[in-house]
Length: 567
Image 1 (cartoon, one colour):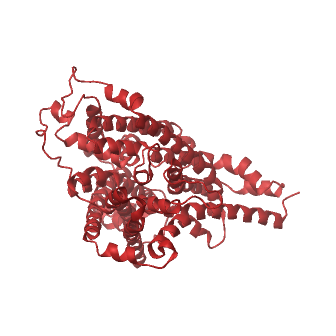
Image 2 (cartoon, helix red, strand yellow):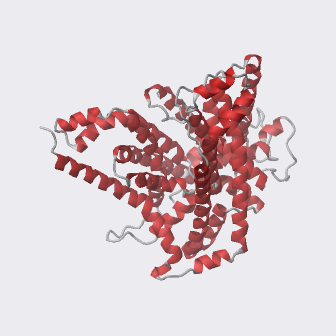
Image 3 (cartoon, one colour):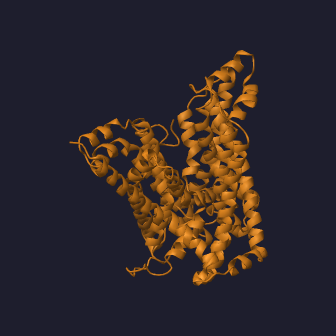
């Protein structure tokens, strides 16, 4: 006998209530607490924090700097990302899977590691430049300590994001229009300029908005490159003021984090406004366009792509590795000076590094497991829910990730500054507050591929089980979960890689004994111990890349679109 309609409806309502509760706790409560601190500090209406922030010239300067590096980094990321997407998506170059994997890798590496790698490549202590005898004299300022350096690295960090968004959009291009243009005698550049670019405009604008939000909220790159040059952006200004003032300045930094959020949301709203003003709809849907045969230009273009990968990935990683193998600042790497002492120190001797490995791995594993199991019911409600308000659940899940990480960090501090009501448990100044922030921020990375997997499976199996009398939670565990598990697990792996060396959130939430890998790398570099920071960063890069390669082995068994670097 099948499940009765009232009983089935009650089970679905219970599941929806559970999903809503999770989203309220991890998405809405922190943001509401942030807003409360700004307008209702201590329970009384006051705009003192707003007035103080608006009257502070340092805040205005940091805001302007954030806009400058955000726009500059976005512009560079657009140029690189769109160019590579067009080359990979529209031509017959070879080795596309390997090229895409390498091009996307900088996005999977923590920003502070990217910054450190480039600093070790160009600085006067560069072991690589010393090897060729072209290193600047010791004491020479690193050229990356500037607004230009920040914009350049932000562009390199997020050009893969643009590439992934644009490449996904190109798969929906109408083949008929492109083939008709070719038949009319239009060359590849004319087709790209008159057909492909106009049709891809909303996708490119959307990629620009996502990239701008990421650039404005980035902490690692401006911290490594901007703080030494006294070039402050809003995330680094918040870090400095919170480090110097503690909980007493929470209202002030809460307002600063809202400014970041407003800038980020303004970019998204501008993108939406622009897209609504023009009609980009297409009347056909077919296979992607046939790639252009490059002929004699294929090898030069492939070599150019390899050179690009060498510049944005191989050279900085080589600089990082070489610095991690020398005994001290400015020492040339030779057979006599090469050493593994730096690795021995960070792996076995330095107490904070050992704690950071334990904390980061524990946090990343916990968040990944949570994300996998929560993504299944959340994805079920979002993908198969029919109520009009379901779409707002999807928006709420994405909110902590869409907004800059510093916003969530300040919101979490405010939410857990006092012990939990009733329980009396204190999360502030413990590793548990970092866990909460990670759970809130990275849940969407598993929910997105899971929702995509729901869209690709046939619901008739689940409906047949319902007719046969299986309860909702039985169907979820025995039928639905096995079907979407590959996508959910792949999303969990992305969560693990992202959380492993995260810095933006943990830099504001860590305490003694609760260090993470990102925090220790930052502390080493700030303390002048670049060789230890490089060694620790090299270990993180190796773990990340090996995990990407490992997941890649099972890519054929995963639904389409789950792994960003695979078709």
